[in-house]
Image (cartoon, rainbow, N blue to C red; front, side, top):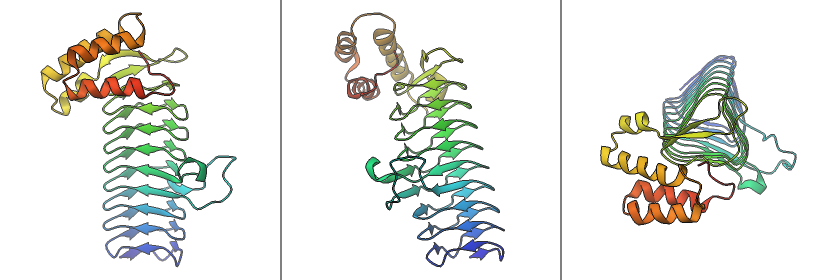
Length: 260
């Protein structure tokens, strides 16, 4: 264990012997720092935060601070950061709230770029990428492998589906379906362009599955029939394909509405 003499570490923190804490870093009470974690100079890790193996926290990042929620009254809540997560400069990630489940969670292998904000009670699946200046309001859920472009803002309680792609500068007020790509381009509402083909190819998704997702997108999003009708048609045609089933279930389970 290497802790710089200028770092301030609360006596109640647990630091693995293989972890590194840089100069002027501040580690709060009940923090658990796992193996091979690197907390760089001037980083701030507040109370009740757990950081998994191999994660790197860059200078001036603030993780585990109290949530920005007027209903928060100091109750005990947590932030859990998975393994091999990268948290870049000046990013902020807040703990959960008592009324929101008490937990903010960052999945394994996420990349949180500089100046990103992840608010209370958010849940990020594995491999999520949040580009610089993206901001997530409270209670946002981002599925595995999704990519959020820079300068984007996600409204509270919205869901971003797995392996979705959101273009930079977008404002999101509804759910973004799995495997799909979209952007708002300023003041407009988000417009879907179809499956996130580039990302899905990188994930080595079979072309027949991508073609089924393209056809599903056309059925659901390229007409003005009621949602229940187009979902039923998509289910009858491609419901035997897991990824299409995931899209259909995502639409049916939405509480805020889904872009189409």
